[in-house]
Image 1 (cartoon, rainbow over the protein chains, first blue to last red):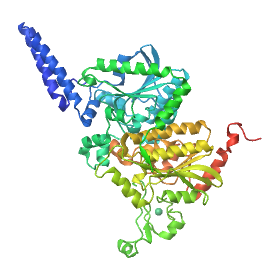
Image 2 (image 1 turned 135 degrees about the horizontal axis):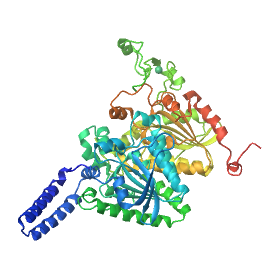
Image 3 (image 1 turned 60 degrees about the vertical axis):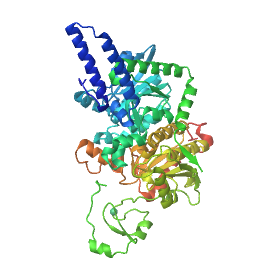
Length: 320
Length: 292
Ligand SMILES: [Zn+2]
């Protein structure tokens, strides 16, 4: 994990944190009681975090979603589940390390988990291909989901990807076909599917494991048809226009809730998920558990009907 | 299209200037100068190199369906501007400009028709309309085409030409991939055939949804097919792409296209395949084999 990484709007927070640390050092070194001063600064820190995070622009939230210290799929699985048994491979070509699949217990529920895996540093990211899946990754995910269907376990999906990998091998092995097939098969998978967008949800790369009964989304995550940079380059013809294109694309959790694309926002601690991984994980676990319980109570036929209806309704048009 | 071998034009630029504009056309692929009427008689396929020029949705309806059988549906479904999207231009203005210029209302036309007397629910995309991009209207029209096939127990044929999801409708465009994919699972469950025809180009969001989900996938020769655009891939890997990469031929070689069929054979090939896959409504569910 990188020792320090500060986003520009986090600087006042970091400065105040340093000040508090210094005061604590002085207090213990000189044996003076600064408890009330420290407490008041800590209160100020909390208020500062809340204020700054409440007013972030869409582009700034994208930065939070990409924060190198932001908890990733395995960080969350370690905190929200127990007895995780990882399973590997698509039984056809290779094991794609950009996606993690396996069995886990979340509270009292046994589930199949599928999650896109990013790293915290360069080495981890190279190993995980920055969370960018190849076709065999989508097929590995589908294989895990087919097991969940066969053995009647709910599926818990964690989305965190800057996109499906654009490369020669990915095209040779049918990236488009793999994503398309997953979309179709997930729409009729005979078991509940709970999706959580935990960081980045870029386009087809996210949707390829992103069709289900419920879509949850962390407060600072983003989900879009294209990255703000991609849209800036293509539509704005200006690579520096990412902040404007993030605004135009409306890619934040609040936007997507309003558009009816996601079902619920998972709150992050003040200062973002990376500032307090434990609270972020607790919120995630609460949300997922609640949704699993709601979904397993619905008869399967009804569940599948509702799932297709949910997607059938998507889109805005007029009839003239 | 970088993978096509460019052959030097046989005519000099001076000679080109002497040709009355509008009567002749230069092949994008081999550079051959072709008399426009001849090209039209040849279904807009280069007689020299078999390159398939882009044609309109109406053109495909004319060459694929039995004459006079097409009945258009869902023409009244039109775009709004749900995101109030503006880049260098307002999205709502873009839509207006394209509709006025092209005399089509969106990037797909759907309806019912017959192919060699076989009833089909058909959709044909039109690359001219914002690059054949899929927004809410394309998604909804395709969704209704799928539902019409299910309701009437007839095959579905979709001819695609698209650069992908329409950015100006943002996440709603992405969701059209899920909408059409979900409905295709119902078509599949109903045991009805779906033939997907890929034309130049079919990429990204459309390729990664309904275009890749045909029971049988047919491609026109030398079309650009793929998930990511060649430029994006080149930038990512930082090296030249191999010749023929992401062509129809490349897709067939790698097992993602059943047949490469030239435009003149398209109608006949679809009909031949459908005669194997399609049985009249009353026999579909009552019999497993219809050999008796
Ligand atoms: Zn030619």
